[in-house]
Image 1 (tube, rainbow, N blue to C red):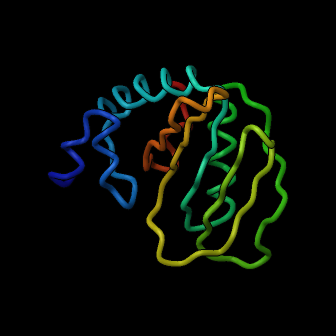
Image 2: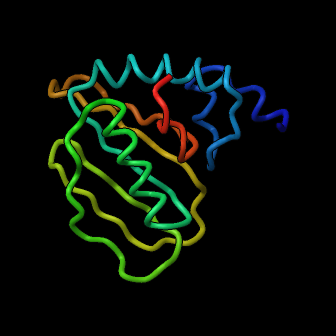
Length: 136
């Protein structure tokens, strides 16, 4: 683990990263505890996935939906060719869109929204693509 990755102990430490760090079990537990509270206090989410493939991106979204018991987003616009993707799932609309995009990092970005417009939306991440694969 690089020095940079070992310095990750709270969500704000992810803000400066372009790609998800390698996390150890302790870091995963700390970050999950923090992000879980923010997600549970949000009215809805937008999930952005930077992934080397559409399959891995969709799987990352499905694991978040499973972890928080959300409805499955319906794929609307998905690329027919292979390549790295940026995928966006909007919990409020129930839609998932993806496009081929080169030059991105890798990871999950979660934007927490509230129905009260006076509250600012906050984007958190990037988390590793398998971060939500298990309930911690």
